[in-house]
Amino acid sequence: MTLYPKLILDALSTVRYPGNGKNLVEAEMVADNMRIDGMKVSFSLIFEKPTDPFMKSIVKAAEAVIHAYVSPDVEVTITTESRQAARPEPGKMLPQVKNVIGISSGKGGVGKSTVAANLAVSLVKLGYKVGLLDADIFGPSMPKMFQVEDARPYAERIGGRDLIVPIEKYGIKLLSIGFFVDPDQATLWRGGMASNALRQLIGDADWGDLDYFLIDLPPGTSDIHLTVVQTLALTGAIVVSTPQAVALADARKGINMFTNDKVNVPILGLVENMAWFTPAELPENKYYIFGREGAKRLAEEMDVPLLGQIPLVQSICESGDAGTPVALDENTVTGRAFLQLAAAVVRQVDRRNVELPPTHVVEMKK
Image 1 (cartoon, rainbow, N blue to C red):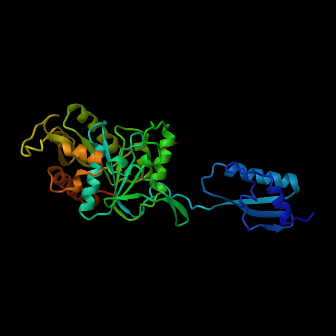
Image 2 (cartoon, rainbow, N blue to C red; image 1 turned 60 degrees about the vertical axis):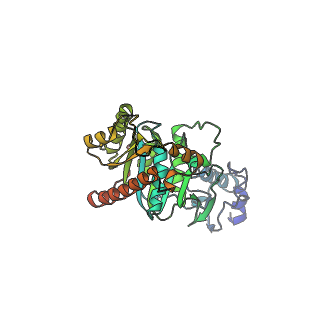
Image 3 (cartoon, rainbow, N blue to C red; image 1 turned 180 degrees about the vertical axis):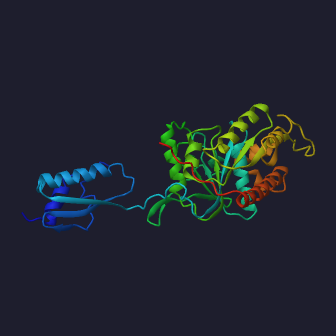
């Protein structure tokens, strides 16, 4: 029996790819590198992504139809290629990013996302290149805070991969799961789905060259935190708390989550948000609604820096709702507080990079 390409292609045209219903020849999945040597045939099958879920079953089906339709004596060698280059492995996803900072809180409602948004704006004001990832998968708030709720990021072919291009606002590169879900619907995802979405926003996006990559983490401790430390080597974490005793108890747990032996991410410091209330008409007055300097005492107790104390001023809330972070105006009390916070973060990151070795991604133990 003599083998020739048409025999092989006719056999392969009986295999359908489940993703689009087309057969392998129609879908142009058979590469033009077919080699025939006597009763030996070799060729490649091309898939869109290196992680294609049907890859193994399609290769087996292709071998089976050649044996069934051509001859059981054919020696078949099939290799696989992908049109899209593979996502870099954990720890190597953001080679052009100098510092990756997780912004965390032990509980919700302490203003963590507000701090993250305004810190990003203030770092840009200091002249740094900044990216901000809204990793609060179940309650994304950055699209509203930056007035980009209608933005829909697109993908661009870069270096053989289709990469999501972040939205740019106020000089910040921004991505949020909120861009990809209906804002009026609750996001009901299992942990694995949420983690996969987050890995895509990190590893399949064109973040480019950044001095600071801020990650607004969900409150508490969750699968999302684990996914982040298994995907990226964090420079450090910032923990946000109010002076309230209940918030401080949760902040303490948050610090322990990052500093335990398995995770081992340095704490850059604590931010005391809503440190006091200052009425706009009485800017010199301070009213300690949630207690006084609780986060300052916790920072001393746990031997971590207090990076800043942010006052509670009505304009913070109004500016966030309007999509114009209060830090845009450095002539306000809060604008100055956030600028001082950004300067403290820069100093602490520089110090951490001199005194401590690089963080490693957390390895999955099977």
